[in-house]
Image (cartoon, rainbow, N blue to C red; front, side, top):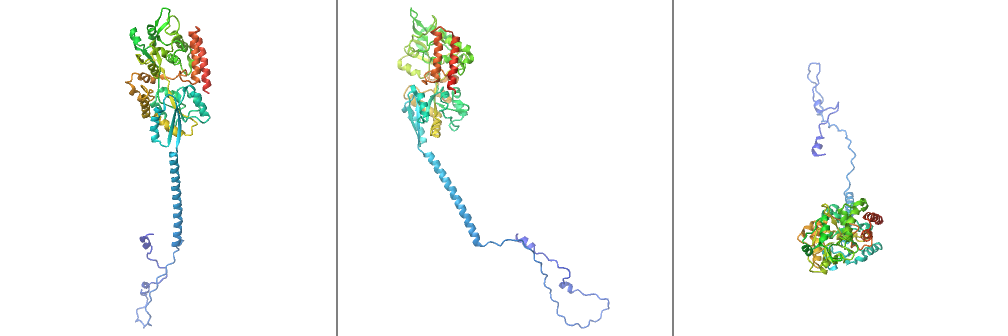
Length: 501
């Protein structure tokens, strides 16, 4: 209650009835008689001012007496003590959390990284950049032997001695599904992956919304052509399959006995054609065959097999089983056209440094610009004890700057590095006539389980054997392409179901 309220509470007090006041005592009393001289009155003492009436006590509310100062001080001390304890606990907890964070951040971690093609001196430069930003992480890179690589990889992962990060072929996820760790969205989001990498990588590496690897390169099947042979024949390079047979025949040179001395193209057989299974896969997809379920279109499958075999059958053949391997024949200058990947360039140049040739996109069928993609990917082991750090390193590898650095380091050891896997780097290779045709085809590439040169002793090798037997049944045994297609389809479905479990 403020001062005004307190003062307003002291108002005039009403006098109870019958109480005499000084004013009422001084009033004259009226009488009916005439006035008489007043008799002498006894002297009366002057009236005494009555005491003010006693105000009845107002009942006050029960208000506890103010505590003593000593009690206030004691309670304050208790609250202060509790507050100090609470703040101390918070500070201690925060300190311990910070220490734990610092401890995990500064904990020394060693990652084992298995590669295939690059020597340590190439990879160490890239790894060094990562370690500068992450001094608590050491990455040990080791180049593995491709011949028994997949079996060794699986065995070592299973017994807990495998690498944290490893390289695998784009067709291997079906065989490595229980060994590959899905990448976290912190590593790369699905949207970022789709913006950064080609559709073939999206199809191969995204399963049920999860991403299972980062490609560091892309390669596609292209056409190598001997410029001197084309110039001598006075013909142009075929861009369509419709013109391919006639141009191949025009380039072919035979002796009097009909033996091929110079072949127009290496097509039709299996064992002496490098990447034969990839070339047949090219014909299949351009002819509308689903490479994941080839039995869905038996007629188109049969047509593609027959067309491929026709280049090595009959008197008009342009290739046969007696020729050198296609890469060797091309390197010697005895082959007009050779289907190969970018890495074949180094083998050809090593065999014949002066050979005059160029590289173009593969022919199209009815305007379908499609080819086969074959590339290698980096993944993380599901059994890695340092998954967080391994994913951190994989994120580093996926960056644009890292791919550029890797390409630069690779180019120090050879003419060019592996073609960029990232879409946003393709145009930087446009002026490179050797490598750009492979990158140019990447948006229209498809993968195949018939892929050559994976050395997996698994799905690729098994399906390739089925395919080669189908071709040999047509070329060597004069069998029907329809029967070959049927047998191939059954073997394909059986093998795929075996690995898809």
